[in-house]
Length: 335
Image 1 (cartoon, helix red, strand yellow):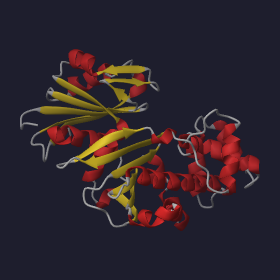
Image 2 (spheres, one colour):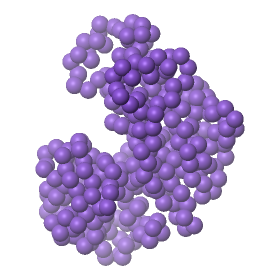
Image 3 (cartoon, helix red, strand yellow):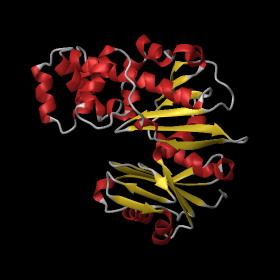
Image 4 (cartoon, one colour):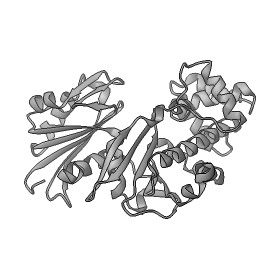
């Protein structure tokens, strides 16, 4: 990016669209203007961007948007918003010379090489290999995944739909969970049991199994809440905590640990595994307990390899926007 060009970077989610305008040298760009706009207020991306640019002090020459959905041939369908985005159409309607759409997990992955210790909670230091592959597992609404490989001069991020692989239970309780979920869904993926949407399912399974009694107070709060996941997490981490809610997040954590280990094996992630998204940050007190790391390493003959692989929780917020910025600034290094 030249010193005089302005770059627009956005992170487009179902709840908010975060936009930042930067300019200056690629190594140290300055933020000119930024805003957070509620996505549901608009019929498409053009509207919030135009509103943003009316207030911004400069016009961008380029734009990169991280979007919550797959990007195929410059097009993304954001089903949670009902938006259809196309790079060519955005270039024309916004009057920007270059527009690039980037999957949000790919954007998140591009942030990983630029995160310092202050942005990470390290669960296992391991013995990282310089320029080794890295894996990203991000349980949010779904179970996003991506990975990075070194191209000789920089890391390049790649999309993955690894969250939709078949759930592989470990132990009797998870065997019963698989049967429980099969009665409800034709295909039980890892995402079905390891995401924000999965937590209420895990809670119902443990309640129906009689693992812990359900308190009337929690039942009433869940009945009144449009989204059960925050209620479960809050009650699990409270003092005193709900036994059933605590058991729910501990089951979730064990499933996440196994899936993080699976992601490490899929790409031989000797550079590290990164747990992104809001859930790992919120559940850090549970993830730092010994059973989590034990389950991450529990891979039979390849357990020694898992002991060498660094494992981190990303604690920095707005990581998708940060990654999209670094993708845009890297230019040809990542092609």
